[in-house]
Length: 382
Image (cartoon, rainbow, N blue to C red; front, side, top):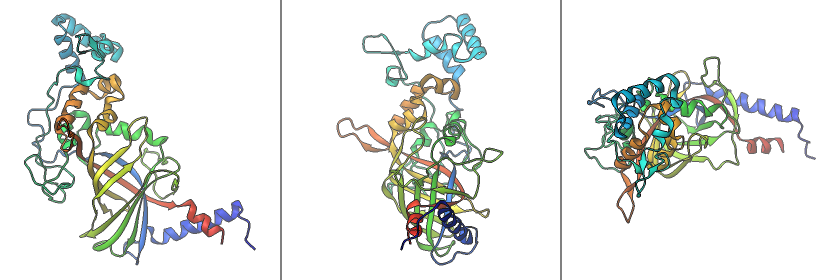
């Protein structure tokens, strides 16, 4: 006769599962077929300022400079421009006529004012400066080495495809050095939703050796709830997190560990689901990741692949319009054109315009105990 499952039975099973995980979660030497769980604590564009030559002509104009330029283009006198800029600096987007002027600075086919946040191509390309760096994090996704490619500063791999960074590397809101600093835009896009959006979980299974292992599996899931943070707003370590088995976000990658680096095989399609209010789904193509096990039990790594550049535009700022442009300090139509020019894959058969852009993202994750509800249910029914 089957035992009836009660809350106390469930709790005992859960505690047993956590206790079992604890036996291997922090050991330095791998046992045969070991597994580890993590919760992603940070994610942002893998910017690279190590080369020192990334923006030889300086970074792109800030929001005050862009506003002054637009006022001049619209025929305002120098004294009026100065007055409006000062009012904007004092009162923010409601000052100086900023919102209506910046929003409707485009022109439709009839020459009428057009909303550039809906139609970014209704204004000429402001020709934003793109990164001229020779180094960037990522992977050679197409097995080709060209002058537009980079060299990875961490692994030395050549032919690295990261044209997303090429496009935005001289926009101040995106600038940072992966693993050392955090750019303003990514801090906003990651910090704000993580208190309400389900966390991302990583499982690494079948680890026999942390230095060299030809057969490991990496799983990425969405949790049933957000991550909790500590007193300094960092994601708490060693939390018990439940996998949302009803989510469409279940990624499985096969990989190898060589000289302490875990690198996965390339996979045709990978979907990661952030908070849709801030960022559309990441739908990567020909994607892979690499990661390293840190001494404190955490991991860090790079995720790279091709992505629809227009979706990245709307996610990076296009969907937030004048709010993003005012507070992140970048020319939004300029971002649109920079991504469009930098796109490097999947040409449209009619126009020839590339629809995908290569990009790499830096991630960090801290240890967590990951529970699959269906597995707990199987144990409890025995």
